[in-house]
Image 1 (cartoon, rainbow, N blue to C red):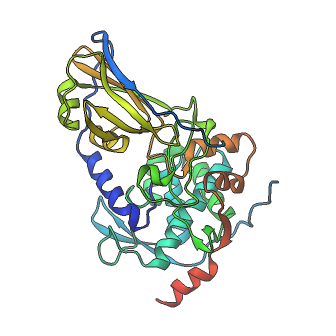
Image 2 (image 1 turned 120 degrees about the horizontal axis):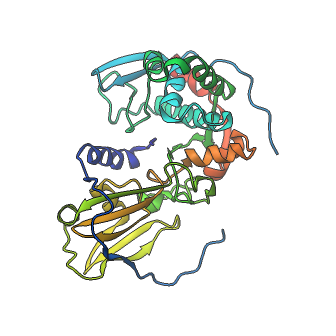
Image 3 (image 1 turned 90 degrees about the vertical axis):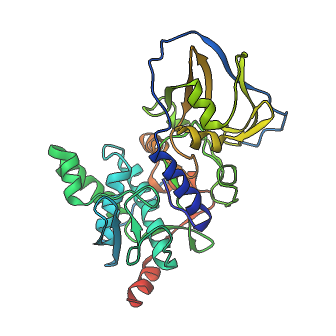
Length: 347
């Protein structure tokens, strides 16, 4: 998930910390009858208007070193750029995804680390490290961890991911000649989210787009129950015993919940997602006995490239360039070799 300029780093760290605290208690869904639900009252508004190229030659990325802080071991591991990218793609996207989706993921991962290297961004890392191996930056697993996790499938999965990284060797995504914040997430609700609707900062290439390929995938719908007392305490509200539990008064361009009114107390969809530890800001709920049954659509913040959407596009025959240019509006694919040469020269 991911890749933030300073505008996003603080929000990302705060969100990551909330996930450390157990946010929900999963209970059987069969207890009690539905007696209240999330209402909705939106002001009327107008709706917004809603050739394949050959891949790069399979060559290695430039010999640039990445210092990864291994959070589980509290130590820095120095790896070559290509090995780092393979480790990120291996950790961030299932290896059985379509090759073109894996290439799109490799391109996003390379864009992020190149941007961090040339900007010398040190936020969120200890001295001497470039990135951590967590969702605050990009999740990373080294070769030994890949072998452990993949077992007998190691050989074909490793080969497939190495090929995806090398097929995009040296390439990054740019906007006005600068590397972009190539944010990505697991699964959309059918649309991606504009950056300003989630973090408040408008970025021209991070705008809401349709992503119908996510529908019906394994992470598209999720249900969980929490006790009413926890729901109220975590949100700081009193829902009473009425038939309506809060009222949606605004939605984002990406069809997610923007604001909910709890008898005069207004919470944003992002507030609710973080406080309850929900998978998405596209949610609905209803009371079942002494609990609240919450249904979410999608998984992740929703900004940038949907990984399951990328795989769906690839399965329909789209190549990685078409995929990234759908999710990141107005971007170009450029060589990062000159930028990386500057990094190497400074060492």
